[in-house]
Length: 122
Image (cartoon, rainbow, N blue to C red):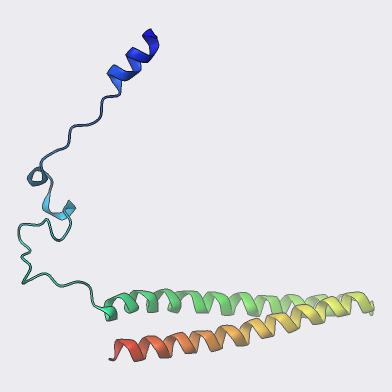
């Protein structure tokens, strides 16, 4: 019982500060004093898609690199199979899926790039 009283006395909730005491950059846009309803505008769709476009621009080359490495790995498996039909089958599967992944990656990258360019250009 005494232990619970000590915990209750030390864990008092923090006192809320007045909104004006916080720096202006920590306030929500509608709480800021310098932003009236006539000057504030929400982010545009083009701005959001520019961020998405930069993410895609960095992920597609990484995926292409990974697919090329898988093609190289599949070729190495095939060369080192020494005529074993099971190892050749595994190497062919690695090559097949690596090439399918590369083609799909390029198609999706082009599709997303085209959609982003269309939406941003509106």
